[in-house]
Image (spheres, rainbow, N blue to C red):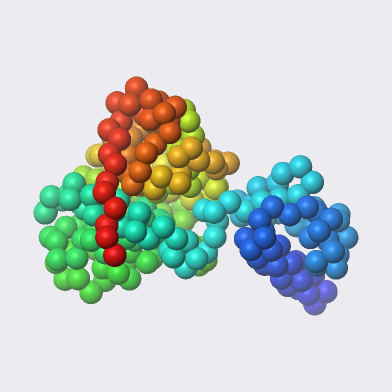
Length: 261
């Protein structure tokens, strides 16, 4: 009984820590200790555990949660017009009869909304994409297996990766938390990275969907280098260093026009 109580208390602290970091930005161990009414040593152990799970990044004296770790519903409300511009252009790249692999994330969801009425095969680990397209009878819909990551509405783990090893798609539309000046595609959540890499191996053409806020970007886990991409679709200017790195690797950088509300 005691161990169960301790586990529940720890889970509750973890939720409160993540909520504090998402709402208030980076926080010091001492501040979190005061907010939670526990010792700094307990907070440090909690931060270590949350970092191991890929839910935050520890920094000197505290921790930070990057934008990519926010719940799906929160991120979905950000930069909608920019994501729609990207989605419209990306949808136009696909021909009827082709297969499309859609990554997790809100931009992939906006792309799914542009695919209604098309004759396509859509493969995804994105539960919101599945829900969006489930009733569209013109689309052959393949939902990958795996463990459910509830807060970000995705499927992850070895089952997802195994499924991807058995599939091939004409297009992969990949999301990211940021692109480094050297062209490296990054993610803030470690558990998603193996799935993204398996998607890259399964895609004939790999297109990164990234709004202009992702350039230059951050993230603690490297997904791939620019040599793994065929194109990047964004909504605005890409900083010169990143654009140069992408183009030197043969990546086409496409700036889509903004969709008017």
